[in-house]
Image (cartoon, rainbow, N blue to C red):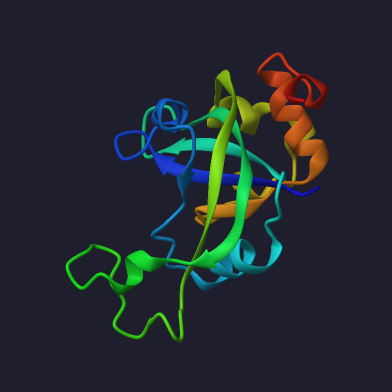
Length: 157
C-alpha cells in the first residue's frame, strides 16, 4: 500500500463534501507528474491525506482512500468546462483521474504544526517550492500526521 496527499481548496471541494457525496472523482489535475502518479501509481485501497489548501491555516482535514484506479479525465473533453484541453481526446487521453472515498475525518493538523514537527522532516509537502496537488507521502510521515490528529493507521481499518 502507498500513501498520498491530495490538495483541495476548502471553498472548492472540502472534506465535508466528500463525506456527504460518499465518493468523488479527482478531476482537473493538469500537471504531468501528478497525472502520472494518478495514472500509474495509485492503487485500490491506497490511503490519502485530504489537505485543504489556500485557506488559513492550510491543513490536513481527513483521510480518504483510492476506490477506482486511474482512468481518463473526461472533463478535459468538455469544450465549455474549465478543464478543457483540446489536445486530449477519448481516443488519446492526455489527463487521468482516480476516485476517492472518505475514511475518517481528522481534527485539523495545520501546516505550521507539521513544519514544527521534526519527525516530518523530508515530507514533500514541507519542502520549499513544493506545489504539486497530488504527492506521495512516506508511511512514517503518514503515520506521524495521523498521530498528530490522535489516531493510528490501525484506527483506519
